[in-house]
Image 1: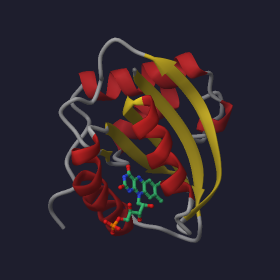
Image 2: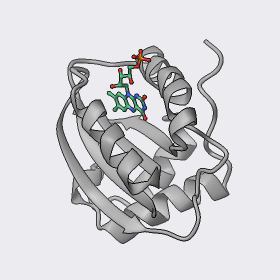
Image 3: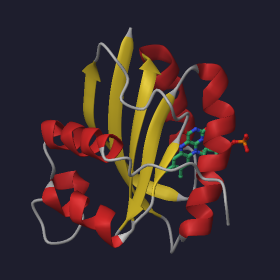
Length: 143
Ligand SMILES: Cc1cc2nc3c(=O)[nH]c(=O)nc-3n(C[C@H](O)[C@H](O)[C@H](O)COP(=O)(O)O)c2cc1C
């Protein structure tokens, strides 16, 4: 069964773009054989990750990710059975925190600052759909 899960967590300490690229690189390597796809955002000290794939594969991966000391306070915010993937082209896409992307984040955020913990599941789904539709997702290659 194909599912999409979206969860948030808070970065432990100050993590920058290089740390996120490191996470995305190992995610691409590990997720490919699992058939898991998705995207990762780090903004305002908060990770927001979309994971798509078989429900058991995503569940097992999520439990592995929870062990990572680079984040804390994880919360599953959306979980749904889906007919198709949004991120079929990315074993883990990176959504860089550019000014343009921040505006998309804030479009769906109730607060003035990016705070996905306060967002409805439908808004989170719409956010990730808009990011991919507007080609705002990149691979983690590069510096
Ligand atoms: C917010 C966050 C999201 C992550 N997402 C993934 C992921 O989708 N896939 C993955 O394999 N590792 C992910 N990781 C990294 C894992 O926790 C772990 O470091 C990695 O799987 C280890 O891979 P390695 O043994 O190949 O080095 C994530 C870590 C964090 C902090």
